[in-house]
Length: 543
Image (tube, rainbow, N blue to C red):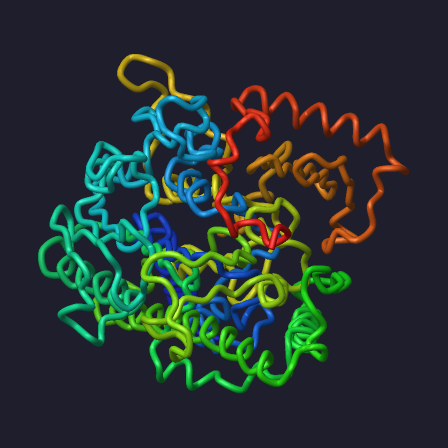
């Protein structure tokens, strides 16, 4: 072999190494680049409602994100809407953010509903590192009894906000704000107005404006949908798409969802029994079955339209060449709701399912199906109330492609995760006073796969007297006024086999940790609050 041939091979080998090194540097640079961030938050969507979590509802766009991203199988919210939103925006547990309830300044601090300015929100933190910030949808963090105040989105770091102040009618809401401009009853002038579609329209509006005027900056978009929260309102063509699909009833729907969950390796646990307050489907009359089919069809239509909006946003990102650099989270604020409340414009008997004249809730039996395979619902601290799907998608930063993780996470983790990805730091003090340490964890190691999975001591819950603590695979949980129950979630995620009697020492130990945390967070016994603070129809057991 000639010297020339050897040198050519050496040069070729060197060239390959250089190409590989440059490609590696480019990959690291792409991962290190500040990502755009989008958080899509559903309202009252159950654990099993998305197709990628076992549901039969068509959600192809969110499913596609999951197929090319990461699904969490053990991610949690706070069991209720405004506490979850407070935890998400501030990185604190609801009591630490004074949002356990929103009773006003005369209430104990943790229940005042007045988030302190020292609790810095995601957009305020991202603004410090060059982000543009946009909010669309539900807010639910404004100070009670005030129509405009320092806790509105524009006062907490958002450049623009299109938000609903009163959640009462998807076709014709009473009052929205476009930044500071009130929009009263948009359905009066636009008969085709539907708030879920309008929220997607507004999100795309902000993305287009960003591309035109601020393309050099990264952006944060918080899209807080009100779907599928009651009233069950949907566009007629979407309702018709699902009518009749649920005539087989909630029992068979629960069984089918559970079977799909097992087949996809999402969960390996028993299906909880039908909620004792839900009737067997076969005991209903034909007319009753038709009514309940229509309710679930409307609920499915609401989720279908939310998913269609996600698809539109993905297309907009691709048209901006921003899709690869955008970190997307999709999750729900609590479990599906068993509430039976009528408010807003009321209900007109005989009205078409999902129309502006109708006002229906999902109620206990279909909520039980939406939360498959778990027990209980929104407001309760069993898995049915606090477990949420979480889909994460980020091509330039996420290692996983169509995988799932059993890492235990919570909405308090989103702020530290987003800030770490963006390069923003949480201040150690605010206006000369130390800030509270953040209880959440950066999920970055789970997303990138570069470091060992995160470790945490425990997760804590309390809402209206329902309480829980999870430490590793052990979960201690109790309904308001009831005794502690203990479950090993590794073997019993459905919480069917109470081990409290067998492991009394562990119960005492975990209960002491819960009590210590409750004192530190300012938890107050729920029975000390006036009955007037409790919402009629919120507790399905009282019906």
